Image 1: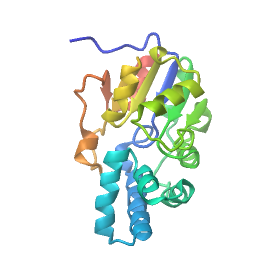
Image 2 (image 1 turned 90 degrees about the vertical axis):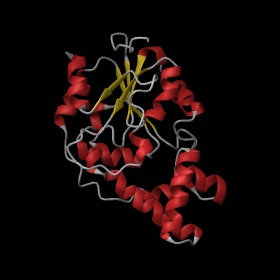
Image 3 (image 1 turned 60 degrees about the horizontal axis):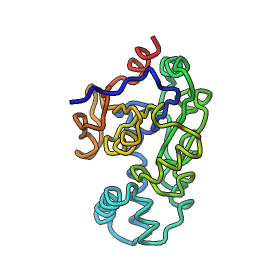
Image 4 (image 1 turned 135 degrees about the horizontal axis):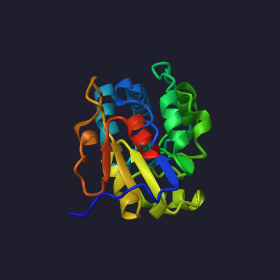
Length: 229
C-alpha cells in the first residue's frame, strides 16, 4: 500500500465549490436540486416524480443533469443555469477563519466547479471569500462537459497553466478525484462532519477509502490551518 501524497511540493490549490467551501449541512445544494426538478418537469411536461427520476439518472450518466438535458432534449445551458441557480444564499455565513487559512497557503488558489461563475460569485460573496481566489473554471469554461470527465480537467490545467504534480484538489465527491489523482494531484475528500443531517444520495457519500483519495477531512478550515503551520 502506497503512502498518501503530501503537500510539501504543492503551489496550486484547487477547490470545488458546493459542499466543499461551505458545510454540507447548509444544504444549499438542496435548493438547486429542487429547482432542477422543477425545470425538468416543466421542460419535459412530466410529473415532478418522473422528473426526479430522470434528473438523478442524467446526473449519474452525464455528470450533471444539465448535460443530460442538453444532450437528449436540446436545452439551452443559459436558460438552465439561470433557472436552477436562482436560490436563497442567505443560509451561508461569512467564514473569516477559512479565508485566513486559504490566504496562508503558498501559491495560487483556484476554483473548479460544475456550477456557473454567477453562482460562484454569489457563494463567495456570502462566505466573504471573494478576494481569496486567483481564478475560476466553471461549467461554461468546461464547454458544458462536467467533472468527472477527463477532458474537463485537462482543459482546466491547460487554461490555468497548472502542473498537476504540484497541485492539490479538494472535493466533496470521491468520483471527481479519480482523474486528478491519476494526473498526479494530491487529493482531499471533504465529507460531512456528522453533526447535522445532510441531504445527499448514498453514492455521493462513498469513496473515503478509495485508492485515489489521499486525505479525508470533515473540517476544511482546520485541515488547511494545519497545512499552513
